[in-house]
Amino acid sequence: MQVQVMKKQRSPILNNEVIVHTHEWSGYASERHKVIKYTANKFLCGLRFHFERLQQYRGIRPIRNILTVSDLNDNYSEKLKSEKFFDKSVEIYGVPNRGMDFGGYGFVVKNLIAGDNRYIFLTNTSINADSAIFIDEYTDLFSKHSNLGLLGISYSSKVYQSLIRDNYTPHVQSFFLLTTTDILREITAANGGVFPGENEDYKLSIIRFGEARLSQITLSLGYDIGIVNEEGRLQLLPVQKDSSLVEGDYRLFIKKPNFINKIINE
Image (cartoon, rainbow, N blue to C red; front, side, top):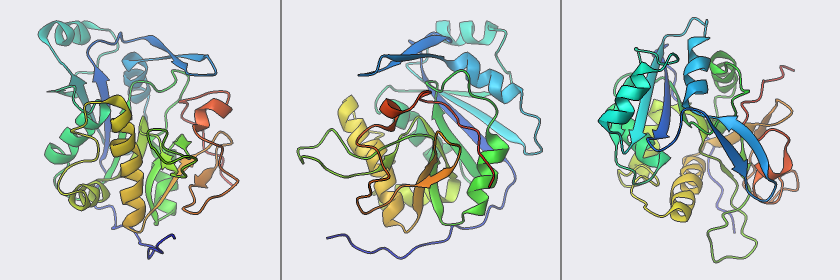
């Protein structure tokens, strides 16, 4: 039986600065190919394209560019800073590889988001290289829907890492997330002061106790979760089982996985 949660409105944005955080592992090349399991859908991605997207931004919002790197070392740091695409304004922080992306996300939440409420993007470098600038249109969409707590570009309708057969647990996939700093603080407080997934060592447990847990807590706080789907429209993820969602990983059913879809204004 589903427990009805009272819908909640977000607290207002009090700082025009937008935090854009990406997490990287030092073992990755700045350009690489990612393959989606079961479909063999292959695409180019990597840290280089993240930097280039931000450098092309011409909007009015000030951007705070944060990079966390798992297993950061001097060789990686020196090589990165010598790359043509490198932006000297980026803040770089080394973090342990525990929790993978969530170790980086947790570090940012606990150490770098003090102060007035603002928008924050949490991403990793598996974003499709063909993606274009996204900051203004995504924050504008988020602003229009004051009940939204978490916005992404892909979802899964179940947690595969569970003993429950045919379980229904819709959650936003964690390689691209938009939320606010106040909501991240709420989520961490609701999770006993621990950012979901930051202390997990096993990849499957990171998905279950990080990615899925993040959406579950957001819903329990009274916010909606959703994605900008392949058609460029906001799609809220329903709590009750709904045939509008695909079975499992959304990326298995679309042409361009991990792509930041352009928003279609209606």
